[in-house]
Each structure stands twice: as structure tokens, then as C-alpha cells.
Length: 365
Image (cartoon, rainbow, N blue to C red; front, top):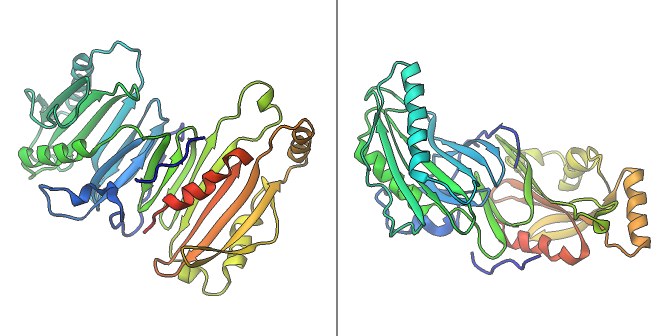
């Protein structure tokens, strides 16, 4: 398991509901500190190896697929604003032809809706010297100027030799928004877009909650709801004898808002027992220990497998000197931001450091 650098998947279609406010991340990767055409607040999103900077009012709305093939959509207050599509094709790919087919598909959809559609002739969006990729194609289109959500669109596509993915980034222009302005939006966002992590770690960030997760942990579940975020990653079980009777290593990051109201009539321990421990069918938890995260009062709770079959499997692995996972829950209440944040981990002893590494990387609003 790699050490975290000092500096800075859900297979089914899912939706994300933003919180009432979403201020920009403190780190922001810190693209918001660079020169910008638009003097507005910004934040950054990290998802499946991608990181990019957006206006603070734009947030993740839909996502699907996994790291090899998938998509996500970002909405503003009115609706869809930006989409990202990726796949990992065979070594030979004609990117120009792929974008031509992509535009033809958009044209067919426009024809069905009885809207005009006109491809743009090689628009200038992202310069190749600003996004050094082996293949990079800019594209665009215009439609009905009165179309409220998609009067025109501007995109960039490339193939990354490092991660092997073909990426298509596509921004929608609004009615009344000049195509030149939308192109500037697109150029700035797409230039900030990176398609893979560094040093064996990936940065994840959504609705102000961000952290770094080891690359070999894959997204298995994400619930992005108003007032509550819950994201789980798992490391696949090794094949062969090393994987016999093993449980997958897991990381689960949670954040609940309005904590000062949630804890108005009960303590953090009582709330944790009622909403998490008593409902957990996978783990059996010990008595909580006092713990603190950056001076915020919290709890450290150790656990073990709850189902009898899995406890017996742990004993069987221990007898043949195979390592077994250890379960921990770190949870704390940040009164200043009125958040309850927790990190639940199930890790092999050799990877126990990952829990602290992830905690060190966390930021939340």
C-alpha cells in the first residue's frame, strides 16, 4: 500500500442531491487562486480519479459507471451544465472519428426534438500546450438561441497515455449566454481538469467533503443526500489462498449536517449508537473510547465481524497465520461547522496506517 503524498463506483446510475449551500473547498486544488476570467467563488470536485474546478454553485448531480467507463453530470441552479464521459478503449482509437460520431448522436437527438443543430468548425477551447496529450480535439455546436438549457455546447476530448482513458468534457451554454462566454467557461474548466491521481492516491471531493483514498480502493457505494453524505470504497479480495475466508478491506466516509440540532437532546455517543452501531449488521462494536480530531471531541470504537460465519473465518485465517482485517470507527463533532464526520475502516494490519493517512487528508465544509 503506498504512503500518502505530503502535498496535496457505483455500477448503477445514481443521483446526487446538493446541500443547501456549497462553499468552495479550502484547498480547491487550489485552482481558484490562479488567474481567472471569472471573478467568482469556486470549488473543486474529485471523482473516479478526475479533479476539476467549478463555480461554487455548480455541483455533482448524476454519476454512473466505474473508473474504467462511466459518466457524471454537473448541474447549476437551473439544470444540466457540464458532463464528463470516459472509457478505456483498445490501444488504437481515432479520436476525431469518435467526436464526429458523438456530434452525429447529438444531431439526431436535436432532430427528434425538432431543434436546429450546427457543428462548430474547430473552435478554440483548450490549447494543446496547456493540456499536453497525445490526442486532443476541441468541438462545439450551436442550436436554437432561445433554448433555455442548451442553446449551444462546447467540448474537449483527449486520450491520456498515463491512465489509458479517453475523456470527453462537454459544457452546455444557456439561452442569452454568448457562445464566446461559454467557450471561456469551458476552456477554464477543462484546463483545470486532471484525469488521474498521483503517487498511488486519488483525491475525492464532493459538496465540500474531500480526502485522499488509495488508488486500489474502488468506489462501491455513494449516497449523496441533502444533509448526509456516505461514500464507501473497497479493496478487492486477493485471489488464491491469500483470499480464502477473507473480508474485503473497506473505507467508509460519512458527514452529517446540522449536527448542533441532531445532538441537541443526546450526546455524540448516544447518537452514534442509535444511528450507526445498533443498525450495523456487519460488525459488533466495543465500548467507545474518548478521542479527538483536531481538537474536536470524538470517539474511537473498535469492532469485529458480527455474523458467526465470518468470525469463524477470522479464527481460521489466524490459525494458519493469515492476516485478518481490523475494524475501527473514528467519529467526531465539529461544533464550528455543525457537522458530524466519521471514518470507518476495515484494514489488514499492514495497511493500518491508511486510516491515519485518510484522516490527515480530510477537509470538510
